Length: 435
Ligand SMILES: Cc1cc2nc3c(=O)[nH]c(=O)nc-3n(C[C@H](O)[C@H](O)[C@H](O)COP(=O)(O)OP(=O)(O)OC[C@H]3O[C@@H](n4cnc5c(N)ncnc54)[C@H](O)[C@@H]3O)c2cc1C
Ligand SMILES: *[C@@H]1O[C@H](CO)[C@@H](O)[C@H](O)[C@H]1NC(C)=O
Ligand SMILES: *[C@@H]1O[C@H](CO)[C@@H](O)[C@H](O)[C@H]1NC(C)=O
Image (tube, rainbow, N blue to C red):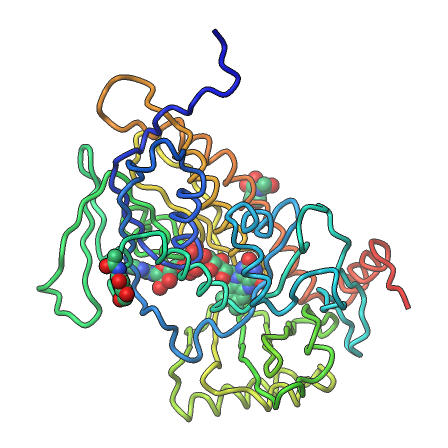
């Protein structure tokens, strides 16, 4: 009586209510990934999903106007995840690097102080099925594609913008969350309840701080000054008009550059420091912006042109100071109804170049477990234990590896003396530069 294609059993979470806190990369991807993997037979019982997001739908100028790498390697498999979600083609259309196959669109590069490439990776497609092996994309463009898709998927009003979660309380069988509209008084706090809470509120997670107060971020000894520079159309200086990556050889100061679009490029200067520094981001006062710009020009002295040109063209609204912080992932309790995905679980610094990739893949894999898990007993209570265990087994080693690799990148970008020499030798051995 074996049926080659038995119809799937009803998922454990069918008909349940899910709240997602944070509509960043993980929070946007999770409902989309759940819908993509949900058995059509039970579409009427697709969970009711509400998303609470602190920010507004339209990003303020100066925020998220930078670009990020979506990768197709074994650790950061954001390309494969977007492909499975059915969003890769749309993302490539709005990306900086576009589809592979056409004209060369730039590559990840490590330069020496003379802007001579030490290593350049564009790489042949590892998977012939995929239209690209990696892409560089504006973060706000990636976010917008997912917002459009999510608004099509969920009923109106499911995404509550400008509404932050201020508290999450596990109850015997539910989770209670308290939310507040940004423009409202504390007295107008609202409560909402769900069967499962997906926490996706990023590296500085308020929910983690509340439920796991000891699980804090670690400063990795690096402070970054960053900005986005504007030029007239097509006048972005080489090599950051096409290529992105780091400059090695200035000892304790590192430089990362990347194209953002045909009119802009980003720079990030990083330096070693014993202490984290006060974070700054838009809106800055005129004085603050001027001082930061002057500091950046001073710290950038070891780097040759077009570094100065690039920094002088910075749009003051994009200037920022942040610290390289991260934390190792943690495992969920078997009886938990609260799941932390993305940076809220395993924050990583930009030196990982992988946090968005992890957020996408976490969302996909949690959705996979929740859409294929079926009830193990006839009991009405929701047992997420096996699904969470399977999810953790995929997510934890991957994100931990990405974080550990980022420490290596930090060391290389800020190396001096014999250490720098050893890194350069290593790069020469792994990949000779053609031409
Ligand atoms: C300069 C820079 C460069 C980077 N480069 C790369 C790269 O090249 N490749 C890469 O893969 N990654 C990169 N990253 C990392 C990547 O951006 C993050 O790891 C990724 O955004 C994490 O996704 P997330 O969904 O977990 O969190 P986020 O994207 O940070 O989303 C969290 C969301 O939660 C919201 N929120 C916060 N608190 C609350 C609350 N209390 N209630 C409701 N909502 C809340 C926030 O407004 C935000 O929208 C970079 C990061 C930076 C800063
Ligand atoms: C949802 O809102 C949009 C615009 O606000 C409107 O055009 C659309 O008809 C609404 N859909 C439903 C199902 O209410
Ligand atoms: C990463 O480093 C931490 C701390 O050194 C270690 O505990 C962990 O096992 C490492 N992770 C991986 C995947 O190697």
